[in-house]
Length: 249
Length: 377
Image (cartoon, rainbow over all chains, first blue to last red; front, side):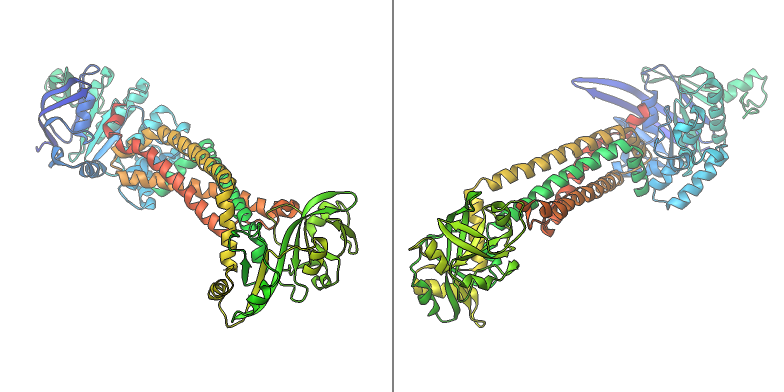
């Protein structure tokens, strides 16, 4: 299988006054499509910084990042924006829906930003919302939706333009356990698509069981990189290694 | 994106209203004060522009504006008449007098026009006929002066007024040009003026050019042949306006008010826009993370700015227009004041500029905001 993302020797330093902070220290990874990859670790370990670099929102200090054949370090700011517009869907911890816009308008934003005519964008957004069970909430403002519904709108927004890479930053952190599981089940489904990579940053251990692969960072380095499918398979005496949530999902 | 920008703007109705009111207030202040200034300064030359039958004003070479005429020799009008291209030339007196109606005594301005031609006399009469000035010891008064001298009384001809101690009979009431100096204005013949103040000299000689002659070259010819200053109507009006601009505090006072309007408007709009953009920074950053480029963010902000500017300007200019529609009818000091098109356009451009610059300065934060920040929360 060709990796969706390859990163080699990623180093990220932040300058703060005279002090230089090393946030990522020689990270080298290959991330495959068709799997839900989780990046975990304690606060400050660099997981969100790594996610930002892989999503084309931040350039590393050094190293090479190649996402679906695009070498991000070589792209200009404008080209990075075009890359994100075409290939990346973002799901944020705090949903980050625009309160003035309805669910369908929020979900249509990536297409509108990409220049798709509004009626086509809204049509696609409604379709995506319907797929996530939010058809009847499409014309509601975010404040009229529960946290779980808002996060599903955010997922619809991340998917409506058909991105090949879905980046999720602590998607369950603001949700109760039931809503969190529902959201993770949706993300798990998404990751089954062989043309798409789903990356989730989390420190919520309750959702580790949804991961196909779990990468743990510590002090800017990869501390552990585990194939959860294989581990689950061993735990089930060599059976198919499916996630315990697959049936529920 | 345009619709989205407008939805975001109107969703925060309080801030949108604050920005619109800021622009409206600024527009009102700038347009109203600028228009009053233009009309007021224009009124300094209103007697010149209202004397439609006069093409050229001949004055003492040292005279530099209408309200301070020198003393010209009585025979000058004859010399001017002899210049080729002059159709008529007549003496024109302007002097300050004391008006006494028994009930009130006050300062006034007497304008003496030649009885034969009545050149320089106002055309529009409220009562009576201007030709009645040809009778000795008669006068015509402006409507506003009538109200000052006989307050609350109906317009009535035949009344007697002492002018510098000489009793004159009222034969007409005129609707004169908007005054700059708010003193009663009376018109007499030059003969009656000489009876009021024996030995008075004309301040000007007013000239009508032959139809084939052009005013400016003719004024030049009169000046060369007589040795006195001669100015075509427009040039003399401009000289008078320039005098008041250069020698009074009027421009400074109005400039201060107009500048204050600009500063207050700019401050309100800039501050509110800054707060508006700051509060929307997270959403703009999310758009940026999704791939929106700087041009799209700037366009969104520009649309919001233009919307605020257009509505605010509309309200402000409507307020200014309402002022000029209603107040000049009720307050004679504002008689003839109006909102010039030039001010409408210029204030519109200034307001648009304030709104756009404020918005574009504010949006810089969002443009510079790294998309990674929104992921970090």
